[in-house]
Amino acid sequence: MFIETEGTPNPATLKFLPGKIVMGGGTADFASAASAVRSPLATALFELPGVARVFLGGDFVTVTKTDATAWQSLKPQVLAAIMDHFVSGRPIVEGDEDALDEDVAPEDQEIVAQIKELLDTRVRPAVAGDGGDIVFRGYRDGIVRLHMQGACSGCPSSRATLKHGIENMLRHYVPEVVAVEQVEL
Image: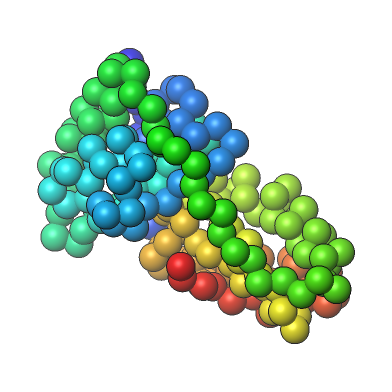
């Protein structure tokens, strides 16, 4: 098995491409070992010293390291853990993920559908290319709330991407949008 590795805009995060489906259409973001209990792969990665976050995308895994850890020592361990997991045949994630609540007024459903369509077709594919994801969390009073995952979470350029890229695009196509805010779960 050959696993490709790519850098991301976040210097603390690397993207690992195992050449196999990881999550298919969905994603899973684990900010701690405690949150990773439903994923044998994420649990194995958190057992490595220096792993701070694990994000599972459609066909990739992003790993964020702690500041005190060097990629030179951690990268071979991550590659080995990913390879061992795929060779073992264990599931990536066990059980169903709890659905996230979205804060949306009933009268805003049409606007929200437009926002989600733009995010799904124009934003998420580009962000996935950098090893992350953006999840819609709500829309109230013209303000779109988004949650950044994977390499995007904690990335130095994520705020600029959110404000100058995503906000400007949404305001252009959906005049009801006045601002975009980042939310943490």
